[in-house]
Length: 627
Image 1 (cartoon, rainbow, N blue to C red):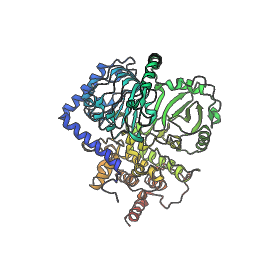
Image 2: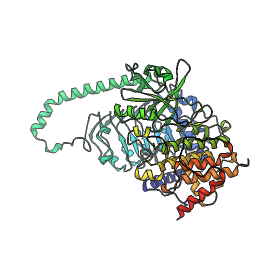
Image 3: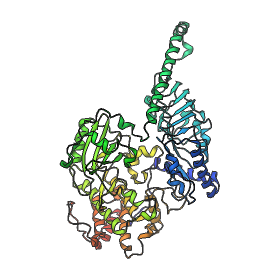
Image 4: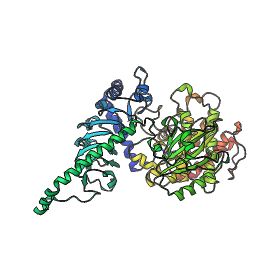
């Protein structure tokens, strides 16, 4: 099999991966031994828990320090680790938990931290002046929607790895340090809705005027030009003095009103432990009809969805993908639906309705049935049939090993049938659809564990900046493992990009590993699952990647064949990858003896109908690639 020894990476991709390795090496150097680093990270979280008031018991119920097993802190709510089996914190995300107190100074003990999100809480006081010493390697810092006061610390300019800095909706005063312009990695910066004044740093086109909105008086950069006070006439100074009293009074009144409005907002958030304030804004629109494609539930209104989801409560969330958040909706008659709140749809109402009608007409046994949609104010809600066994990701990567019950026949069947659904989207449906967001989180399982693709067609409804690349350059590592190399370079979605993403899903099925943070890889390895597989292949160690629980059961040949198909899907050069129809046929041949499939709607011709010709197809492809 012709798999290159090194993935072809574009400049940005290589830079961030290199940055990740540098961070990790730096962490090891600063932390000393692994044992010391573990103790330091545990102590870090302990001090955070002790320093913050937790009225809704989010931390109290999840952050239990009595467990001494390796990696136990990685299961805490809001904590992400470099590896799930070591106590080394990568990101801390404690958004919208109602937390109170000052900025947790003990955060400095999380020496490997690259992301901190404390947004939408009730934190107050000043941002530490030595924050760069506490967050040396942070790429994302979100302190928005709190009550932080005082000036923005100058030392933030020393957080040289920052991609995202969000300080909006606080009570920050004074000038924005102009030295922040030294943060040459910045992709997102926001200080709107504060009490700031003076000249703003000139970040160029990266930061827009919206990032500075609703402050006392900012100028420069994307805002209006700053006046040169040295050139003002004496008349102007006298006039300014004359109106100074009025101006001062106006500003004072404005500040009072601002604080009063923040007090009201704070009270609302106190009364919003479920984190569904957006749904409460829909008050008065409950009578809007839900457009349904299924006659069995044709009469439905937004009010029915609100009741069925407990007003879109956090407790009803069953999954989140790049396109939005999915809620479980239990109707009074016992019928269960899934409702997705789309993220940042940029389409006008007419365009959105047209898109929904098109997607609603697509029927295939391996697509999640789209049952209807609803528009209320700026919100876009999509209604699906409920899938009892959740996502493939959750089934494969359950935190409790004893809860993993997926044997090889089930994994193979899921791979074959999911490939059939995606091949149908690429080759047979009208219009043909590129999924763009394939991952194991978008493959849902019904009560019989039959896979159904979700999110198909939704990528076209999203904000253009909400892409794989925007996730990548902002310092987030979430779904990076599924992204094809050429997309990072061109920002163009293609069918072969879907094939790459699906190949990563196949690798998850055969190895049991996550798309990023590979457990069985060497400790120093910080790449993706696809890169790890490529490295093993170049060293003739490919077989060692197979999930150990699957070996020694008389199916090793099937496992090897399956792994070959997955490897061909993640080849770094798009034209060398098979089509989705070929992938489906390859997998179907492997599973011939299990009788998973019958003649179906994938009508493209193929001479490969059994496992014996699979090797011939793969060899034929390799021969073509070689020449």
